[in-house]
Image (tube, rainbow, N blue to C red; front, side):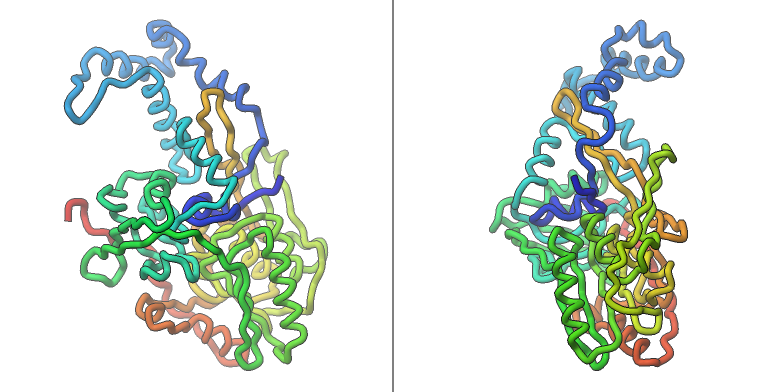
Length: 426
């Protein structure tokens, strides 16, 4: 069973089985988990209230039963719905957007999604400062063609406010049948008002690797760390070796991640044998693991002849690659702060058909930097504005080419990461 270190939402919004950020079938069994999870609800409310730690919970439960007046906009809840709501609240209290309780219907939908192809809009979304934010529209997809951009904050999905939605709930609203339209209302930094953007859903064909040569610089753009990424990068590196280029750019901007195995394998083309690529840190330190290079280097790389391009859409496996090459002083990292998705989730099936997706580990770079703690800071900060994207201008790639050509490239001031959103109701 391979481990996934990218975004679950990438999987739900696009097609294919990369980027789920989930481990399956590890840890305690569902039946063992369920016994402890629901045993507190099996007791009589009066008996449970005697326990100091749960007394207030049962007191509120009883008050709601006795006093809540059902209205036209609400309904009487069943015992099962109350239990599921309580669990959902407990999970949400941890404040981790990747730790989610999935009721039976959602769990079944998630299981179906990870097993096959379906239609979507082709973009990555994540939670930033409590706001559902577009991390990256994938190249050539409906999301990109409709004009959605990295950094756009989703305010509404059709007529539904996104203010209080979890990521998985937003994803469920955005995806749908091929040919249907979903309208996303977004806030974009620099725009005076909200933008309403209709997107026609389609079956998503996700690119993996593309190459180009600019003078003496060979550029390999890696869009995902999926099951075929290693083979595609090998082909690209062979083309690089056969070319007359002597400098290399690895472009992982907008790459949301994928298989851990793929990230380690591709990093091994650059990192010397046995050197640490990434560390996996658990609450139980005895489970900590270290992933090392297999040593299939294709050349001798230094910060003077290798650049890794990153941006706010570079996440998870992309951050593992960039962090490894940066920490081992093999490359210069250019661009903007990465997203900071450095965690692994385990999906635990529960007895009633529901599931718990829980963060079980964090990723650390070879020097011990937590990827989750705000992402990775580039060696040289070069911004790319919305207008430059619209005009197909790429100052980050241009800076990388100039740097590798020997020119002095100075960091710009970091772009503002905190996205301003108009108050609710405007």
